[in-house]
Image (cartoon, rainbow, N blue to C red; front, side):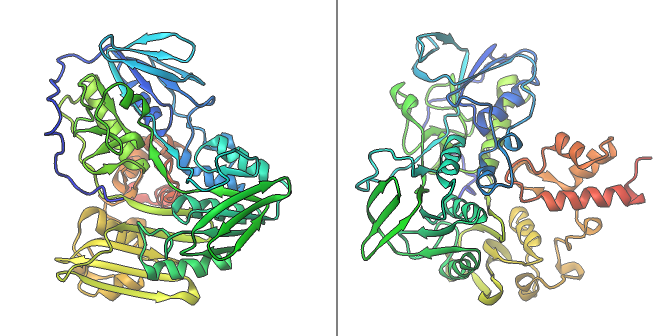
Length: 496
């Protein structure tokens, strides 16, 4: 996913005159991570009444951590979003919106009730793709998609007493599902129709090392293998490929997602691959906005949590009047594979041109792969797989557009970087610059953590509650814990 384009894309949409006062009643359709964050941001304003409508029957949860639930590392309560809804926020779960009347500014619920709004926000998310493979049209208890908490429950039910599992799809979500099931002791096979894993983020070299690492963790991989049919019975599932059949106790479908745009399309809003928005998060109707996985900004459809939360922040600032001129400017995200035993970070584009430097290092036996694509002494893309101590430096250089040190090998191989050439210091908290982003999902810097500590936070839980660090993908937890530990013992940052 390339969300690094900072150009404005709203010129094709009708102008949205900025209201002089904030809308009184905002309805948010969708109680996922984007909708829940927007409700929390809006709750800070006493002049806005918010109603959040969620189709799922439970409270909002951290969808990113579903693979940890699958692996048994977290329970359902551990991933529930615990941020208070705040003043003036009403949440209704287990309700489905069946229609939007833009002229009347109302929405209709599945029980016939109508609710009126001053401003409507679509945070409808995305839905799992079920490929048109013969045998998948009819649901079966041994076959499940992997997208929602209910999906996770179905997979865990099917895994009771199971010894083997198949995962169709070798993208990010598929590998997380595979690793989670392997963590429960199942022998897992991943089937991917493309010639290498995570083809949107990785190159062939990184994929080859990842395949070997997965094999050591109990996950076999079949690449360039097309599924031609599925048959399931009480004893298991058979997945037919072009050249052979695979048999297992259950089958997990992780074949990608598509934006949920049905309501928007039926309401006459502009829809392409997602609901088209401009930099104000406005749709083709100035009283309707869209954020998160359902929204399309330029050519990019949502899919990661950090952009969704940034969209929620910008839209809340506009709707409450805190910053009526706020606009959404996307950054280039960093993709992390959140699976036990695998440390992977991928960012930017791995398609160099003649003006780029392309340096790489692979040690398959140790499960290590590193590649840097550099233009004009700045990173345009990178992959860091395995135990590499410079991964934090690489992410910071990419995120901040910093100058890459002249000794490329130091960054590539994780050797200590010294002197003025190192724009980002080592991971020692005392040497880390205040503007270093520690939590990518919530854009929390080291300086923000220090200020939080100085303002009275005295534990990791306090820091997390005040800054939201670690509440996204969770990959920064060790870094945040290390900084909090350093703050608790360092006299130099103590509260005076």
